[in-house]
Length: 413
Image (tube, rainbow, N blue to C red; front, side, top):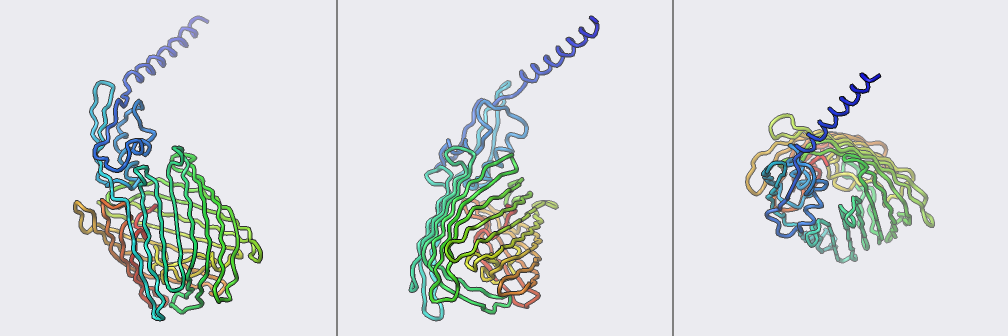
C-alpha cells in the first residue's frame, strides 16, 4: 500500500513543481505607454485594448493583438508600431500611433427639373471628446419641407462591454420605387418620425447577441400610400472574426436578425427576417478575394419599411436605393488589388460579379446579374471607410449603373 501512495505523492510533486516553474517564468506587463495621442484620451486607449493591461501576461501574440484592437477602433491611422522591452520577467510596451481626423462634415444640395430644391449638412464625429463615441447630426431644408436626423454609437456603454446605438429621424422623406429597368412604379412624400434604440453584448470573443426597439410613424402627403404607425422589437446573433490589415480586412462575419412589429391604428402587425455572410480571404500577396451573400423576407410589411435595394455590394447593378422589396437574395464575388500605396493611403481596384432576385407587392420575382468594377480610395488619416466609385452592368436589362459614395462595403465587416 505504501508504494502506490509514494508514487501518487511523487506525481503531485512533479505537477506542482512544473506549475510553479511556469508561473515564475511567465512574463508580465509592467508598463504600457501610448506615444502620439493628441485627441484620444489615454483611458480610452486602455479601454480599447482590454483585456491587455498592466499586470497581465505578455505572450508572443500580445503585440499583434494590440495592433488589431487599435485598428478595429477605426479612430487611429492604421500604421501602428508596438515596441517591447523585456527586463527579466517584466515587459515594457510602447505603442506608437496617430489619431485620425474624426469630424466629417458633408454638405448636401440638390435641385430637380421641377425646381424643387433641398440643402443641408450632415456632420459625423466618431471620437467625441476623445472617448471613442460616435455622434451624427444632420439638418436639411428645402422647398417641400425640412428633415432632421441624429444617431449615436457607444462601443463601451458606461464603461461596460455593452454596445449602445440610438437614432432619431424626423421630417420629410421622399421615396421612389422603380423596377430594375428604371421604370418608375410610384413615388411619394411623407412626414415621418422614426426612433431606434439597440444594445449588443459579446457572449464570446467572436459571438455577440443584440436586441433593439423601434417606433415608426409615416404620414403620406397627397398619396394613396397608407399611413404607417408601428412599434416593435428585434434580436440578432453575429459571429465575427476579422483580421485588420492595410488596406483590407480579412475574415468571416455571419449574422441573422429577426424583428416583430406591432401595428397601431390601421397598420397590421408584421415581421422581418434577414441573414448575411461576408467572407474575405487573401489568396496571395495583398490581394482580397471577397464573397458576400444576403437574404431577407418580410410578412405583411408596409411599403415605408420595405427593404431598399441598390447601391451596395450584391445590388450594385440595380438603381441605387430605388428598389422596394418584400423579399430578396443576393450574392457578390469580388477581387480587390492595390494599385498604389503611399503615406496618405491606398488606391485600390475592384472587379466583381453579382446576382440575385427580389419581389414585392408590385413586382413579381425579378432576376438580375452582371459584372462591374471600380476604384476605392483608402485615406489613412480620415476616420471614414473607403471612398468608392463603381460601374456595373445589369445583363438582364442592359442598363449600366454608376455608384459613388463612402463605405459601400469595401471590407468584409
